[in-house]
Structures are given as structure tokens and as C-alpha cells.
Image (cartoon, rainbow over all chains, first blue to last red; front, side, top):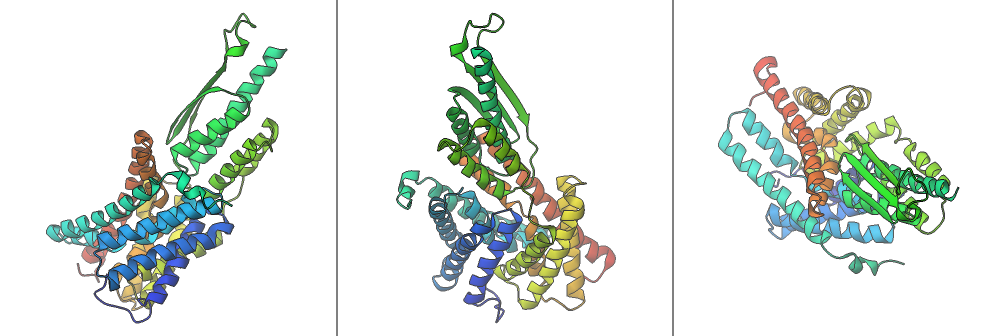
Length: 154
Length: 273
């Protein structure tokens, strides 16, 4: 993901904006009500920013940075769910989408199609590893008892 | 008199609860949420011994009232049983939010059975977001996701175009007429073709980034996340069903991309693998 930087789209600021609007666009496709769009966008942007910053400036591997991002997204989703009195799902699903290892999956398909199986296997496993990181982050934060979040209730 | 009144009360309460569960499940809620909501509604309307078994595409609800025993010689106790089959469809989280709110309001005593039933009908009829707006979001989402996955400005533009065209197809054709696997495959073929043609015309730079951005609106995010959620909640049967559903969609997308890549490189020319 970091081989070649586009001068405009790959700056951190543009990435934050992409995370925000990308998440909102998918919130709309999933039928999230209008009043939650902004919050959903913030959750998605926050998660994606954490991922980008850790990967670029703290030398985290994709597994580690995606895990941290997933933790942040699920945690924020649960906080906002309590504050806004709505199901966690509303924020979590579209928030997690930017983390999907799309590039890895694409190259897996590409290498398979071009009969380069060892490379396909490599990229495929890396993509699965990222997926596992996302699931792990989600599961760990989901395990925090509800009581902990009740503090946020007004 | 007493008996018949009680009977209708119980079956009506459970009918309302089942209906709420149906809408929740159909629109992408977790199993635990469905069971909890059904239990909450039925309990408030006076059903103490309700049992709910919820799968990802079916609800089994039973309830009875022991108080009425021996009043009516024909039946020992009043029974209610209902089985509903629910096809796995897309997700409408707005309905999930509304039902969630409704179940809270019911618990707070704001609804009678009749008004709750009316409200359920109302929620079920909430129209989806306007078509053109969905198409627009799909395009914009594709564009920004292309940048998230590392594409440049030109690539984002190509992705946006492909995302728009893809969602027009989804709305007009694939949503209603064809199977999930085939629909996603064709959708992905369309999106990938648009990307390849655009790259050939010199609009985009990096083929991979544009394709990923373009097909991302098809990715089964809801089914996947909810599936994991169900498995964590130990609803294994429902969880695996959802994950299989997500995998089928995913497989369709991957095959669409693969078929198009092969098609363009081997038969139509102009693409090197």
C-alpha cells in the first residue's frame, strides 16, 4: 500500500476526508438514518486515520495497525450507540469497511488468474491475516461488558 | 368471555413480537437483538412463558398461558405457536433503529398492542433512500474508497464512474430478477469492464486500485460483520449461515473480476496479465 504515493490522494488529510465520506456513502447504502450519518463518518474516519498513522509513522505491520483501528472503531461505535441510543451495528459496519484488505484480495485474484499460485497464496494469506486482525479487534471490544459503557448515558 | 379475551391477548402479543422480530431479522440485526426485542415486547404485553428460537432465516415462537387451564374443556391451556420463514435480503438499518426505539417505547408504556401493530406496519413500509441518491452514494463511495486503497486522483474518478454504473445495474436488474451469486458476478463484471475500458482510454492509471474501488459497493459488509457477531454470541447456526451468505456474494464478486480480467486479456485483447 505504501509503494507509490499519489501527491494528492495519499496525503493524510485526503485520507481522513476519504474515510469520512467513504463511510457515509456506505452508511447510506446500508440504509442508516440521516441523523447518524455524521457520527458514522467520524467513526470511520477515526479508525482509518489510526490505521494510516500507525502504518506510516509508527512502523506497524498491517496486522497490528488494522487490529488497533478495528479496536478504535468498535469502541467508538459502542460509545456512540449508548450516547445516541441506537444499535451498535449502525456505526460499526460502515466504519469497518475502509479496513477491508481490498488491495490484497485484488492481487490474490490477479495472481490466480495469471497462474502465479505461490504469489496468490502469499497475498491471499496476508489478506486473511488482516481480516483476522479486524475480527479480533471487533471481538475483543465486543467482550467489554455493557456496564462499562453505561457511564456515558445522560 | 374471560378466556377468549385472554387468548386473543396472548396471541396478539406474540404476533406483535414475532412481527418485530421478522422485521429486525430481515433487515440485518443480530440474533441476540432479535430474541431480546421479542422477549421484551411479549413480556410487556403479558406473556410470561414465551419461547423464541431464532435462526438467521427463521423464527419459531411459542407461548402459553397456564392460568386458563380447565376453563375450556377443548383445550388444556391456551397455546400460541408461530413459525416464520425469512429470506436473507439486503439490509435496511433504519428499520432496525426504528424497531429498537419502538421496543424501548413499548417498555416505557407508550403503546398498546393495537398501536404497536400499526407502528410496526408503518416501520415496515418506510421507503428506501431514493434511487438516484443511492446511485450517487455508490459512486462517491467508490471514489473515496479508491483513494483509501491507494489510488490516485484519476483512478478515483474512474472508480466513481464505475460505481455509478454498477449501482444503476444493481437497482434496475440484479436486485429483483436474478440470483445473488449471479447478480453479484454480473455486477462485478460490469464494474471491472468499465475500469478496464477507462484505463485503455487513458482516464485512469492503476487498474487494480480502480477495480477495487468500483466493486466495493457490492462487498457484503453487513452479512459478514453480523455473522461474526452471531458466532461470538454463540449463535453458531445463524452465524455460519450469514458467513456463507457473505462468502457467496464475495465469491461472486471475485469471479466477476477474474472472468473479466481473463476475458479482456485472452479474447478481447489489450490487457496483459
